[in-house]
Length: 403
Image 1: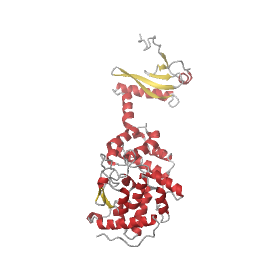
Image 2: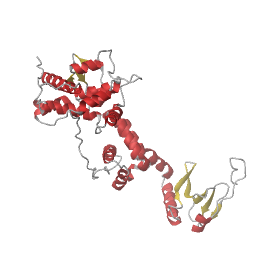
Image 3: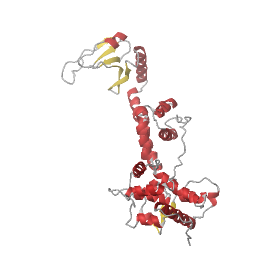
Image 4: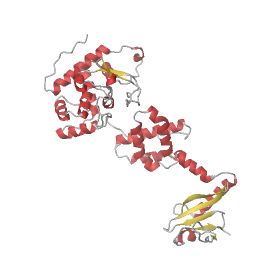
């Protein structure tokens, strides 16, 4: 005799018959869910919920435990196909497999969401300083559509469809690049055979060339004000260094007028490292030393919470709107300074040295000159030139002599 139900009520008699399409689709729902068991394939049944929702399942036992394998909604799988799937599941059980456990393992370890999580923890956190942004892009634009899919089953068409939902070309390119990084890592880990992102064409984009004109510089400088975000942006303009590195400038890295940036990140103090991972140093002109002043070890530019300054890009956007000039970014301030380096005839190579641009030239392997005097001379000259512009003076033609 069947055991009593959990609530103490007598067990419900099993409904058994050779299932037909009429039984599957037309049987009326009841106050509680019930099953109609098929007489042709043992364990195969349709479950009908009080809401009217209907799904195919097959039942088996493994090591004394009951297993219910969900085959699919009756609207997505027809009766004949569901019966054949149930027969295959039964055969796998006879051969010693556990289909429910296998599916759970695949869902927990092999979906894009799970692989992405492993990629972040095992690789991106250690190798990519921008891992938070990478994770955010994939979480926002890819996981809602592909997150629950087994990574082995994701095709190039799936990737194209997902990327097509991102309406901004540059953003779509970033999502595609970061997805490709995840799949490449998965391939190296032998989780998949190949990267489905390969062969997908990136959106054509125009390289950004915005620099601030000599007429715009004094207007922008005045509108920035003297907040900590403003001082950070002014330092970017007067040094030509990357906004993210300036925002995280630390006083212990400033030695004898030189800002010495370790290439490797230092999580203990919050230093993110340089973009290319190489140690870098630049001279801080007198105008910059006046901005940063002196103080104990720690971040030069801090928010109220004592952490490195944030939201400098928001201030830049609001200033441009306020004074009615073309949109400019913090990186455009860096580009403006570096353009002045070449504009004042210091040369393209010295500009690359100051910018800490990665170079693949063979000659760089043999050139071990640190360019200290040249860097100091160029940065003092460019900073003085920009300072004259923002203060309304006519820039002079005299270049400081560094002994």
